[in-house]
Amino acid sequence: MIVPKSLTAREIDEMLEQKRRWIYKHQAEWEELNATRIRRDYVNGEGFLYLGRSYRLKIVDRQDVPLKLKDGYFCLRSPNGKPLDPDAAFKQFYREKAATRLGGRVAYFVPY
Image 1 (cartoon, rainbow, N blue to C red):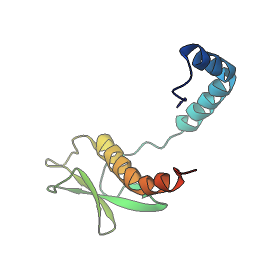
Image 2 (cartoon, rainbow, N blue to C red; image 1 turned 60 degrees about the vertical axis):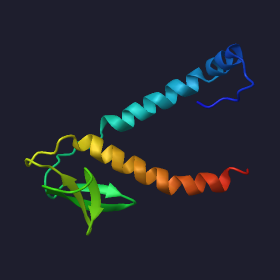
Image 3 (cartoon, helix red, strand yellow; image 1 turned 60 degrees about the horizontal axis):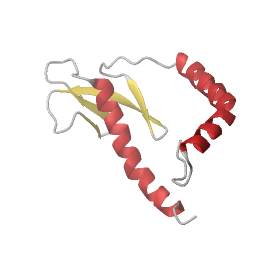
């Protein structure tokens, strides 16, 4: 939650108390949605979404970054056939792409 710097700790606590029910409700909904989350196997051919399209995974021996989108495939670096930390590689990839794409949109709306 982002609050104005002018609010005191007491005012913030009061605001949170007023929103407590809403927070718990939405937290429960989020947990319910994620309870059925798809578990992925990081093997050749597994599908992963990016910008509304599904891309197949290709395990590669060498590349300069842990994960990249190349020639219609997610290429995941794995020197011994088993990816070192595929979850972290995908999270990093999505975060970097989001920062790039969302930065311009945020800057557009800042004056408002």
